[in-house]
Length: 189
Length: 444
Image 1 (cartoon, rainbow over the protein chains, first blue to last red):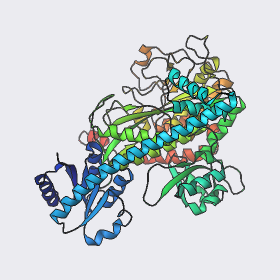
Image 2: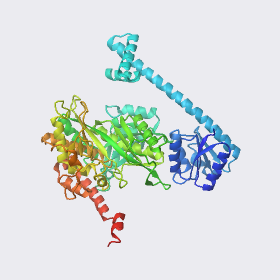
Image 3: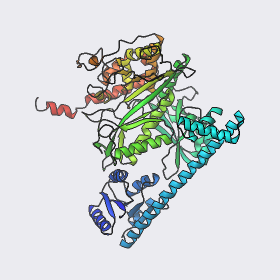
Image 4: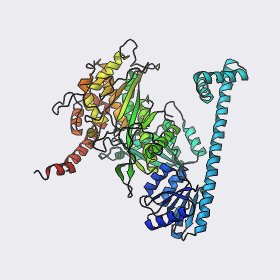
């Protein structure tokens, strides 16, 4: 199935042309709008795979919308600009899920950029999730070790006894070992 | 987050460097409850931590400019937070500040100081007052000119769980952000009216809960805007549907952390202090309303038919009493004041509530008999002013002017508050509203 795309431009004709072009090339246009605030609402309702915007939109322009989407890592973005608007984007140019295309747009470039961004952003999201999980696991491990140390020092337990005590508390109270560890650390601090 | 003493000056300088924080917002609230801030860069941080940043005192006044004088901002280190949204110019931190005069004494017109004074009064009696607010707010669409409308995005009803409900997504993002900032969110759900949501957070001590309320409103507005919606805490934005209240769950602990309102021997598990506290709140209910419901629009919410309180009284029934005592709370006996709305200045509102309750305890004010269901659902008579809270801002201000206890709670803020609110009332009363034109233009 083609990538789901939301399109934004204050120019209704461009909006139609772009949607038509995208649908013809196997993509799935799930929203069209002329209004920057509306595009934010739509994106946060349907979570598309990609957003293509003109710099010119009513309400919020393409730059301001891009900032919001990038800060929250919502979806990859292609912003279409005239060469005179390039300087607005100096702070966003190196963002991995953001791409600028300068008019006049070459159809092949557009398709290549779409495919590249969708692939890359999926991969980035995946990697972010993995990193986040690993970070959390590491944090939990550190907390549990800290708690174990405190138990060993305060109560003269062995490493294994401390480990089992935390496990038991976690099972009996139905809470994660991480929370047990935090409670233990707070108690002894 | 907000609770134990967290940071020293050195901690904050270290964190600012490590987290590469470029800007810090020194926040304070004016008497109308509007959040203000002075933005400084990391280079001015030390100066700020040494209480050397100056502001113009008139920025606290709200609409009323009295003397223009310089004041110092004294950051409360425990309120240091890094905002979890990332602007591309660098991370932003914040600290809520107290306002001090140039001679080093606290500015008596600072709402946060007003609250601290009443907290001290309670502490001298051995009491630790805790508040848990329940927030309601509306999410409206922003039009293409950037202005909020009263068009809601969804048409869902109570406890709706639509899969692609934008309001749902916004509320979820709000809760996630708040939890990231250390808030303890108890519940969040879609409220009765379309576009209306509720988020309740766990109670904390009076000062922290007021700080939390200020922070909460800011976070909600920022996140809503990022989703193309405008969050409003206006008490009654739309005629004919529920308004937005801020019910406050009130608890009182002693120095050992024991709940003073709890007494297992009582039928309702309430102690003598709890009954007196209720007595105090009811005795001062009219004046209190001027502080907990401070806008003209607040009184459009306080009408019958929408579960908002009107009659002065208390009950255990979940209907529309002014004060509700929930049953079956185990040792967590609490008193719920249902009149406040989120347009209030949280420092002043909490201070006034506490002061009224303390007066009840000090003077052993017995509350009236509990209200029955039939009393609560009795039709209201326009002339019945004795048993109801004020029906307009003006009435409330008049009631406030006659209540020495609540006036005393506000201290120096009282005069400025009255002035600002009188201006607001005069402005309102001089405007001809479209309702009047529609109703009278043909007939007369």
